[in-house]
Amino acid sequence: MRSILLALLVAGASHASDLEARVTHGYADSNGVKIHYASLGKGPLVVMIHGFPDFWYTWRNQMEALSDSFQCVAIDQRGYNLSDKPSGVENYDVRLLVGDVAAVIKSLGRDKAIVVGHDWGGLVAWQFALNIPQMTDRLIILNLPHPRGLMRELAHNPQQQKNSQYARNFQQPDAASKLSAEQLAFWVKDPAAKAKYVEAFKRSDFEAMLNYYKRNYPREPYTEDTSPVVKAQMPVLMIHGLGDTALLSGALNNTWDWLDKDLTLVTIPGAGHFVQQDASDLVSRTIKMWLIR
Picture (cartoon, rainbow, N blue to C red):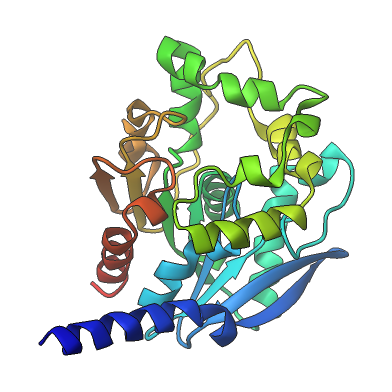
């Protein structure tokens, strides 16, 4: 029995370690900006969008879990790893980030996708779904509340204001000079994965990473969004690690008021901001069960 268990463990470790050898790499042209992606599996298209500081490899466990039924395409957002890194804060406007996702979907010969996003990728996913609903089959968001919920908390919740100090720091002109690849990989727990992250961050542009904050993150004085509501037109799955200190759970309230279809909300105590890795198995199983329901 012991030898069988050992063999299974070795096989599982080997299967995980050769993911990079099994994915297919490609590039999409987004109005002259090359967007790199890694693809695994066949079936309905699932496009996965990482946040800060991260790259396509953050979705490795979810790609493994879903690739038997779906084509999982994890992108490097512009500024990161193998994607282009245009200079200038204006080149990181969320509308351009949404366009990058659309370019990837079109380059794969598809007209829509299941869109998955975490952190900044979550904001891009929300905006993609709200602005290009015809290309959004279903929407999956990890640890990024609806933009209206986040704005409300920034305007009225002193704890969220305090916990967003890091974002205000990132908006400072000299912020990029204080970063290093090793520092940015601080949150990665697995040593082998951390080495890959350090390599990816050394290929990335720190100024570009922070341009996401400089261009798109709200600035003080914070105000609540009171514009007419544009409701999401597709089913939404939200997964939120409750240990997230950057994006507090209060912003999840009232999400259902901004959707036209069903919302499934899964909160995970003990998991932090990077929920797709902190609770990778639960996140993967939840996503797969929700997609095939």
